[in-house]
Image 1 (cartoon, helix red, strand yellow):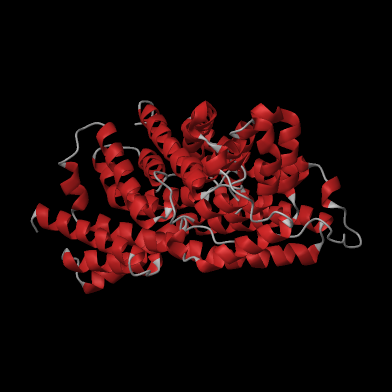
Image 2 (cartoon, rainbow, N blue to C red; image 1 turned 180 degrees about the vertical axis):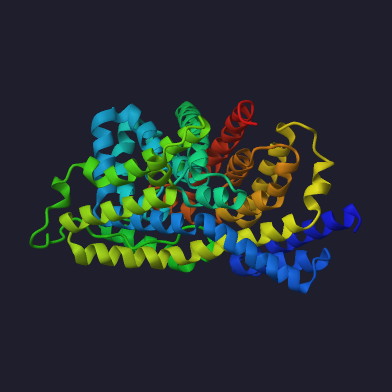
Length: 482
């Protein structure tokens, strides 16, 4: 078929997927599946091969990422139940002080706390953020809101164990350890520079408390009201209303809970014990990635450093810590919630893989190769722009990142572009212009006492700054990864 025909079909189908999600409120999973089928049929793949390719693509991605997503969800659910996040934020404030705490919080949220559901993280940490904000000056509310938005969203798509980062790695065949190291190289400077830029702009007068702040929805009943509102917002949205990646989780009421006989009060357990299993798993994965790069083979590390095994051990160890602190019944309840929340994550990831497989089966990669120069810069810009446009239209960080990576991923091998760079560029683009279609936008607007105008500054502007900086960091990384 002519090149123009294939390009036109893919473009029209992707546009149609966006329209049916935004205009007709069709679930993104269904829309993506229909889009994959349409591309296969219209580009001559045939009915049988289209279905076979979609099924294979779904299975291939789930084989790479399915268990990893499950382990991350379960670890996050148990840590949430043990009240570990609240204690961590309080500790960071004591250690780093008022000026340093936004950076400490931002790096924590963007890296090792990515197993926690975003909505739950906001609800749990928002009261503490409101206590910190006045200590940061007149722009404190805006700075804290931007810190939350930047770090949580950047972590989702660029940092293992963030759900979308794991999904992108599986979709593009990037070893999870390499994705962790590459993500770390981009995420850390992106979070620090973004918070610095936004904080400076806000302090120079861009943030106006009189118009950018409003009375908190939880005034007079902070914790309970926040939880009720979070559950109300979450139940009203569809899978694609936020990132298409994380559903609202019930937040455990740690304060005031009775300590089961034979267990310890979680507040007396050192934080390193609560987070130790997860940190150890990430260290094992990173160590094995380094050994792989150095071409050193250590059989024991090849087993223990495999992400599936490392995170499985973390699930078991976190569960044992949970049983000793909050008791078996509460640990089991948290696991049930984790499995419930993980269902839509699995399906969205798999269907994204089905779409990518159908596109890869055709000749789109060969066609696009002719339009790209033999450089890593132009393709990465194309990936970033495509993900950004999709996100502005759909409002789903994960969906836009997966779609952009799936479309252009097949081109990577033909032009010698490392799939890691495609994943990072897609993640960076998907962060651009988070707005009113995002559940995170409304949660931060409500729980941190912002007006809609204020949220547009802290969330939309703040994360867009991070999107551009992340693209720059990815381009810098491309000079060393090839």
